[in-house]
Image 1 (tube, helix red, strand yellow):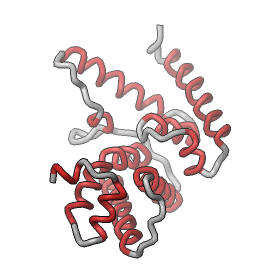
Image 2: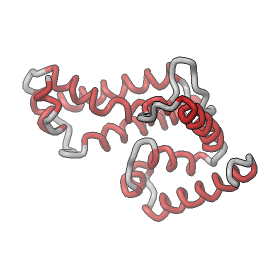
Image 3: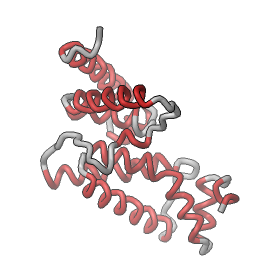
Length: 193
């Protein structure tokens, strides 16, 4: 298993297609946190996020088995595009946007490591994340989308532009306005000195 972790995504896909099921398991483990967190930040519901997450990897498996995967060395971006499209489909069906509400069992910020052993710093960080999540939810949909994709899915502006079918300048502009709006919201909420 340790040997599989050192392989590239493309090598794992090749192994999986040659009847090596643990290769896909390694690929899934490698990318699940980013894909799941991005989905969760869009849909803001644990059950819906889990359903969409499963649907993403079912689509990935189907595409791989049919031999239609062509994005060599860009597996994560491809998986994120599938996740994004399924989230968009979900919203088209439901025609509503909900707010991020962490649950007792999951917070999207739980996967961000905290190497500090200091409990006080941990509590302060958790409070800041909670307040920031609420402010991000107040942004217009397009701005919130860019913030999530850039900061939580770790995507480049070029990838965001391609995924959302807008120009790179539009993506950059949305991020700029999102930051301006977040700054205003922070000032109003007295989070900034």
